[in-house]
Length: 139
Image (tube, rainbow, N blue to C red; front, top):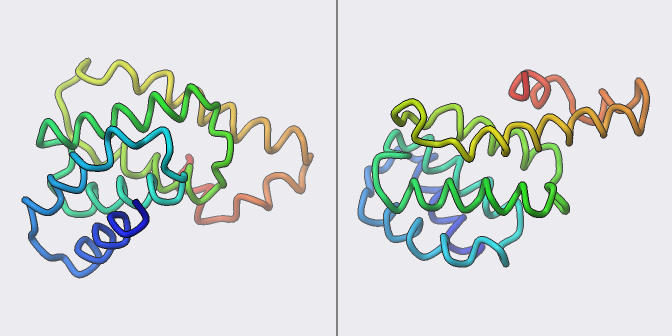
């Protein structure tokens, strides 16, 4: 799965139009979300969103939904700040009809708890773990 994530990231970073490849990656990763590591998930969603086609296919929508549901089910266990920030950015970039993604509300709430718990556990130093870039994405 790491290889798929790296390919998606490279294609998106290079601005390569590879719709069939992105679609195949989304289809391949979606049933394996529960066993993928958070970095691979967040990098793949980032790549799909960066490509400008994210959310436009059934495979994209299924992958985004599966990642959101998995993140909520595991309460973001094993995720780091960068994973959360990249995934939230990807969700923000995806354009779908209003109401089509009701599962997002639970995902966003889970992310908010993650941030608030990190700050509460560490006090003022908890904010520093997020860094300016991640905080700006999370805002």
